[in-house]
Length: 349
Image (cartoon, rainbow, N blue to C red; front, side):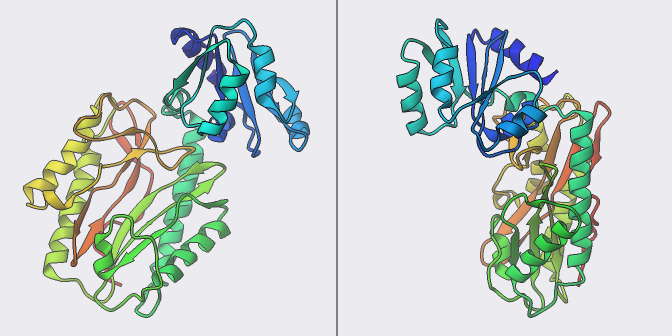
């Protein structure tokens, strides 16, 4: 189905051929997870190219493709594309690759494509949803464990490493991005990657983390407090939680991408913290931890059944602190299913 959908899109976009080099897209289409692979497709033919290190694995694993062993995929593509007029390629390639490509396929019109496969990847199949749920369950269990680990005197990076090792113990292949642990005033940094700063009594601690399980990502955020919480920070936490849960109550297939951002943003603005919510509400999630769709006032499109997206409102006040709460949501026709189940009650450790 994935291959036939892609070939249909190739025809719709008036391409005679398409070159794919992004390894996440290649995995999505073939199940191949090595480090060297190239796909060339036309409406009628599918070719997979890799070198001698992976050729045996490719021949055992991949079906529906002609398998070619080579260390010069572009020369093979030039041979296969002879006589074709329009060949698409992914616009994420570097200039060096493009320069060689243009030299090899000098008689063809080269067309950069944006999110050509990623658009197909937005709608998750049943096995993908099952795998993402498992990645979220691992993150939930790791968060439960880290709550018993956080205490004054621990450093942010010690907390991040604890989460990393705990998720690996439970079957994760690795973290899905550099873990964010931002404590005290640093919690006002939306992407405050963990440092050697010690966590102190009275600190808010924002933890944004996730893992890869069988190639699929989870991504969640919780903010907790060590020892005590000030009245102002309690108010901020309550506002962020309202925004997070307000979106969960509204999200469903057919909702516009702009409204997905607007619902929680309105809640934060009504609480007079709008200027401190400085990023979009979320993103798609799957083989990459950040995928389309993205959300904002100018976003075009709508949520569709079986998309997996994040819901991550936050308030960040410079030189004071911040709060973010993030969940992973499976969009359905009736609403949404929250895949991350860690508690969102205000926690004082």
